[in-house]
Each structure stands twice: as C-alpha cells, then as structure tokens.
Length: 138
Image 1 (cartoon, rainbow, N blue to C red):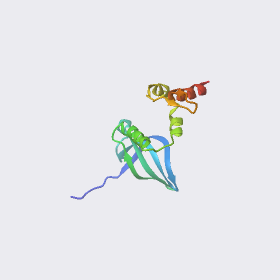
Image 2: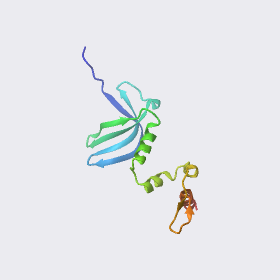
Image 3: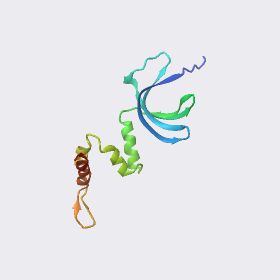
Image 4: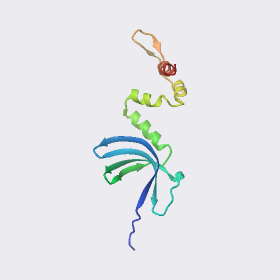
C-alpha cells in the first residue's frame, strides 16, 4: 500500500501582527490558524495559536517550521517561563501590560516586601506602579 501525502493549506483565522526575530526575508509570527485539507471548510473553533517562521519572497509567504500550542494555557506558560528565565526588559514588559484593564487590580494583589530608598524611607513598589497610572489618567 502506497503512503499518500495529502497537502494541507493554512487558513489564518487571526493574525496578531506580532512579528519578531526578523532577519533578511524571514521572520517569526504569531497567528491563530487551522491546517486544512483542500476540501475542508475553516472552523474558528478548531483554530490553534502557533508561532511559525515565515519566508517572504516575491511569490508570497512560505511557511517554515513552527510550533502549535495544544492548550489554552500554553502561550501564557511560555511567557511566564521566558520572563522567569530573564528574557525581556522589565520596563518594556511593564509598558506593554500597563494598559490592561486588570493591571491596577493585579498590582494591588501582588505581595511585595517593603524596600528602603536612599534616604532610609520605606516604600511599597505597588505605590510606584499605581502612581504612574494615576499620573497618566490625569
């Protein structure tokens, strides 16, 4: 019995416009996709988040190697792991998340040990983070 290969096509349900690691005509992307046989119809409920290398040329995009997340928690766990491993600039990370609706409540719920500044005064990091938000709203 011959082993038949059925080519799949990629249907992009949502392009998050997260382009990273660009070099030459290649880049990494984050998209919600579904891989389909030619006769299949796209189904948003079957879409999965994936990170994939894309090759760009005059003929269009060509998919390279990628990773498809199997669970809804996978992307968040990846982010936490990368942050814990020291990736990302802390100021930039805070800048990217400060506009989230849950940011003020999350900052209030974090347990920080009080720290001393140069004058010996004790301050709470939460006050600094939340005062930044108050200044922006004013």
